[in-house]
Length: 141
Image 1 (tube, one colour):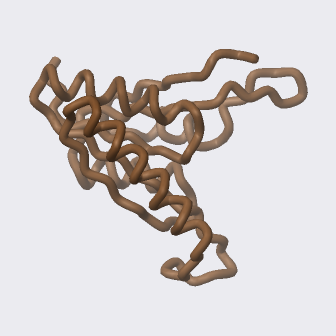
Image 2: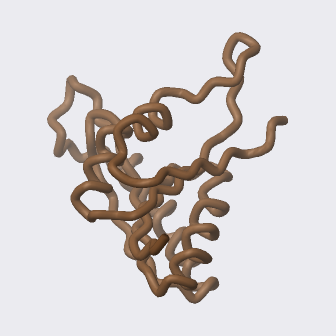
């Protein structure tokens, strides 16, 4: 299986580093490319292109950190800040647009009402992505 393009949606959580490191490791072996995206979820009450300064600043910091990590790992990475109504469809749209072979998503281990909870983004991406999807889940605490 040749994996030459990898999409890594990041959000500033502790699992971002694991996802970026894994993507870089695979991309280096395959001489591929890593795309890291940070998606700002824009409320429906605002225009999609609304300037949300605190979120933009956070996104840029998260993407800068991904750039630094990839540089340390000697990996070719491209980062982009996006705005969308929902994260899941935005990830799938980016995967289609960039024609990626793999999506690697970091995920916190969340519990809701005592049960493990995948949230809404991961199930959407798993169901709709046109390529392989790997989930890097943090250890349960």
